[in-house]
Length: 244
Image 1 (cartoon, rainbow, N blue to C red):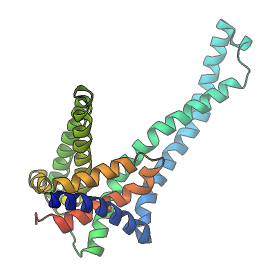
Image 2 (tube, rainbow, N blue to C red; image 1 turned 45 degrees about the horizontal axis):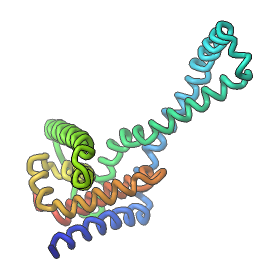
Image 3 (tube, one colour; image 1 turned 135 degrees about the vertical axis):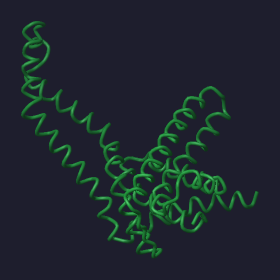
Image 4 (cartoon, one colour; image 1 turned 135 degrees about the horizontal axis):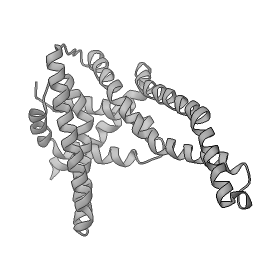
């Protein structure tokens, strides 16, 4: 029991340590800003497309519907522009975090390499065949974890009281694995060996993943805490795993 409590405490500590490292080491900030810059470029393109292509077509459609259903009796002329603006803001709200995660998945791999080279004096040197093999293996592991996460989400409501608790813990464990996965790949470790080692640190990874998943529910937390979450995974791998 004491060991379990110790592991839970360590999992939370590693999350804190990773965040502290990120905000203290200013050279790491560029890895968080690059995904935001990419997102800004995507939305700049969307705004231009919306203004020059979508907006005129929407005006024509609204005018045609207005003539048919006499919308002018109910809506002022500025309503069309306001409606399109609100619609665009809703799209941004629901997609910005998804885009950030997509872009950061590639940027954070570079961050892991730089961080490990500077902090742990470790540098990976894989040929193209090994890199492709690791990419496929990581894709399989991510797909597996995503399917398991969906399964636990479905099962939770079916088992009263105990179901949500077990589901939350297992989702936290899978989320914790995702934070360490990139560092394991940087060491050339494939999922089979990685998961065996992760199982031996189950409570530490669960506490790490559960705490992180709760914090990331806060507004804008994804942009502020995701880089530190990945650094926490690097610390856990280098200090707790023995798969070398």
